[in-house]
Image 1 (cartoon, rainbow, N blue to C red):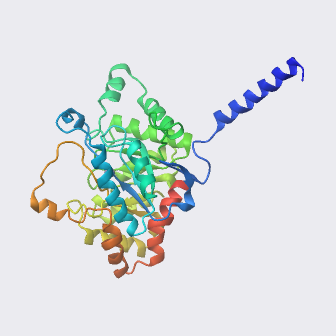
Image 2: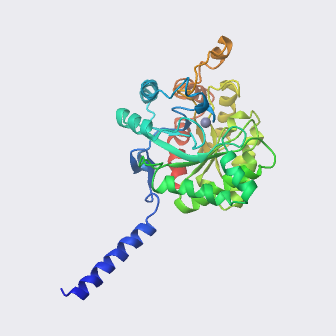
Image 3: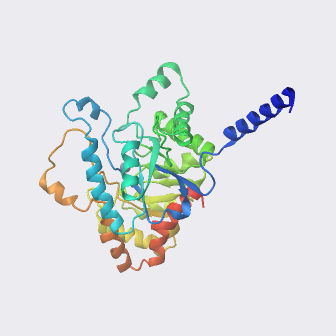
Length: 355
Ligand SMILES: [Zn+2]
């Protein structure tokens, strides 16, 4: 081959390679980003859609001289907890810890997944204005007029396509939240818009935090207005509300809802939630409902000693509460095995597939 045609061929090869890099999707159709790499959505199995292996409210690092992050202890505690979940056939856990709080640790997630064989899907996302850490973005928005929806969406997209930091671990869901009911604040509107921009770019599902027994309707409305795929949206913490009409109003938007605080009895006691979920199943909503606990297996920062009565109330706030207590209670109220499979296996899978 002459030099000229060699140059032509190599130029063509570079072009083909470039076009592949530019057009390569964040994750291939039918696949899901776990912390150990993409897996087929079909293989996720029984899934808990909202848990935390480690968590701390922003500011915890201000206390880290006294209470530094103990990686080994965090790993050990979580290994024991994951084994308990696996005993009940839990095959996938989504960690909903966002970028701006403590505890999102790709190295920990990878070690846990490798040592136990469980699928772990981690988040890219921002927490609420009240309990997250928005000062960095808000000052840019307020002082310089920066388009922070675009700015935040760039973080989300990068963490989905290239990975979190230098870890190589790619986020599998986009997690965002709001502080309460009524109009969503300017900052949180930007965060939710960023989530939709990232979904459009990557095809990933959005999962949410709502605060108190409100906010789910406003979130769903904003996502739909911005053009999110309702089949790739899961409105979280609807279990904060005891009002079935609130749940139905969100379900009417065509999105998924998550009763994902089972065991957090101070929000809504388990028997109340079981009744609501059973009623919704009876009325044909099983294919839009997911169940989880929002457990925090390790709280980072200084240990504290909760009052004994509180510990008693929260005794069932643990990774196996749904498997051990909630599913049998649902069955007693007429929920079928098929409906349980729909909520625990099919809906999580379909959220990732947009079905
Ligand atoms: Zn959570």
